[in-house]
Image (cartoon, rainbow, N blue to C red; front, side):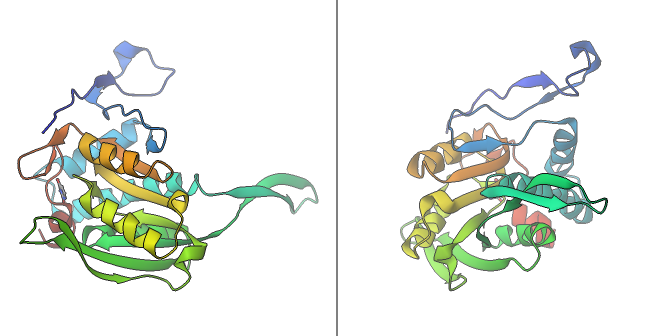
Length: 242
Ligand code: URA
């Protein structure tokens, strides 16, 4: 599997001189117009450092993953349509602002994606949530759809697809195929993801050029078991059981 050279950069506010900023490995740069990588801020890198650490206990893993998930949801919402909207403030003055347009749904890829549902609910009260279960078929080694439960009007909604780890891209690609088969246009699907491999980004972004990926970090590659490296291990195990 390919291993990219992950850039090591000074991380910190723009106004600080480079020699006053610590260095850290930041996201691999990817050249797809439909991929948004979160700004590599000190905050994000410090949060990722906690969840990547093998000795981080489950409670902290959950707490700090949730903070990253919140950043992903907030960024994802920036890609939804808005219209101009003027309101009147309590002192009687107009403020020319915006309002969101369009209905949304979250769809989690079980089980790790379910960890991202609360972050979405925290930002979008009463959001409809669907679920898709895709697992590896033991005979063919290909991803197989085992279960899905989606809001009835999913075709009328923008869909925030939730899966924290984009490794080979097999599950995410199958999930988008399921959504498209239920009438969701590709361009109304936003895939929110904590850690991605360059291989997964390439497969997903080139197969669905009008969908968007929002990820916190593109890592170096995959190991022989298709774990993301350096990665953080098995997200579902660390979030739910370890
Ligand atoms: N899923 C995980 O939980 N971790 C990986 O590294 C890849 C897929």
